[in-house]
Length: 124
Image (cartoon, rainbow, N blue to C red; front, side, top):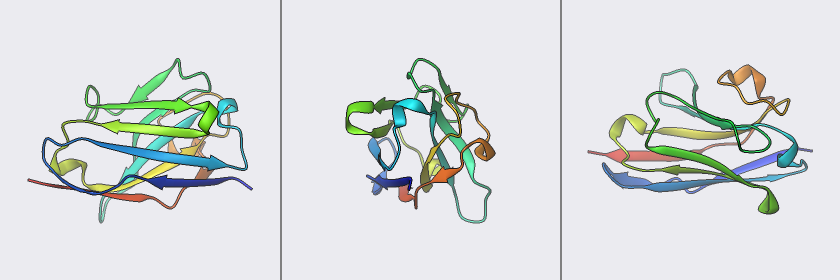
């Protein structure tokens, strides 16, 4: 069965950087799109970033473009979200997701497999 386990969340200050990791098992991430989403308290889960199976096509939410980078390490079955210049609005639980196909999108309904999430808190 597909299992996604996120790690790397922490309490940091505004302007700091964090690197989130998603370790996948029971699947070959090189065959699928992978994405990161986040959910703040009392808010809908929202798209953050996604990459296609080759890593050549990447999509970002406008709010994180230029600050966050998604990439896949297929050999380690890991998807990374590098987050720089964090601000308090980035505070949320971050979820890794595997797509149903090789093509990456911004729509969470296109991602049938999800991790349990990792908490990121940014203080001002």
